[in-house]
Length: 377
Image 1 (spheres, rainbow, N blue to C red):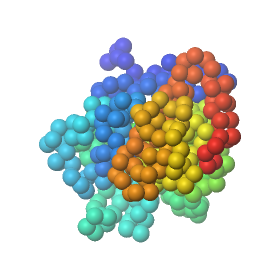
Image 2 (cartoon, helix red, strand yellow; image 1 turned 135 degrees about the vertical axis):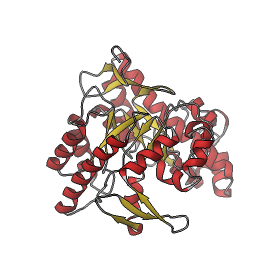
Image 3 (cartoon, helix red, strand yellow; image 1 turned 30 degrees about the horizontal axis):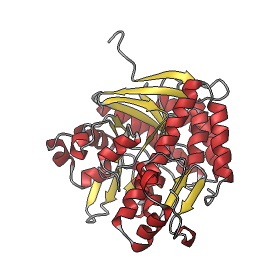
């Protein structure tokens, strides 16, 4: 419709880098970017309620269509009002297709040009995933952003396997687009390992389909860090400026800062929630392991500069006690703090971009992380 509001708009940009401040417009509300998506694989963020997530500044959650199709099943979710209502979450949701599970559960997978046959990790039953079936599942779940089925090759892979990954991902994306009704926003995914020519071809094939947004996948799968950054940087340049760019599955706080400076807008990672359950906390001075004996009688907060409810109320000594005692509350409080750190980090990046002080802000954050008291990245 003429004059309709765009799905994505760029509101500010840093002239010294490719970083930008933007906004996604979805049926369930706006998402200010750069944005970090807490991971709710099976329909829940482990250790955090929807109220916690809203209070901490979460705007968009990531769930997994494959996992939800296994349990509780897409019809159950549909009958209970769609995924957002099912979760008790009043905001938008992005669903991953399960393509990364195909990569990580390779021993359970049969892959061909039609799609994927994968044995359920729950009961061993054989499940069929095709591009059309994934889109059907995601639309039935009623999500706001749909990630298509893609073919993620491990690192390292032979040239032939990477070629296959790029060709298959492109063909599957064409089929996904044909199956998509227009409900929600379908993103394209770029593959190609760390081979520049393959990444370029994959991006061209994806962008040619004129989709609402684009993602760079197939990174953080074992490649050296400098290759990760080099590939990610080149990948952002190949995607249109007027569409949102999503770097899948990354990363550390340092990663987020560097990736935002490259022009990426959306991020997800299990680090803040998974590490919370293991007692690793993120702070403005680096990581720390709250199980360390040196915190046993420490009366201070995890991070004196953190405004989260955990730092406002609980001491390091108490959090260590919970962790070494195996209390469920340990995982909950650690998760709230770590998500507060991640969501606060991207909120700070947005403010810095709005105020024209992105270089100074990010330089200070990186210096503090590199020189702080916590265990370094």
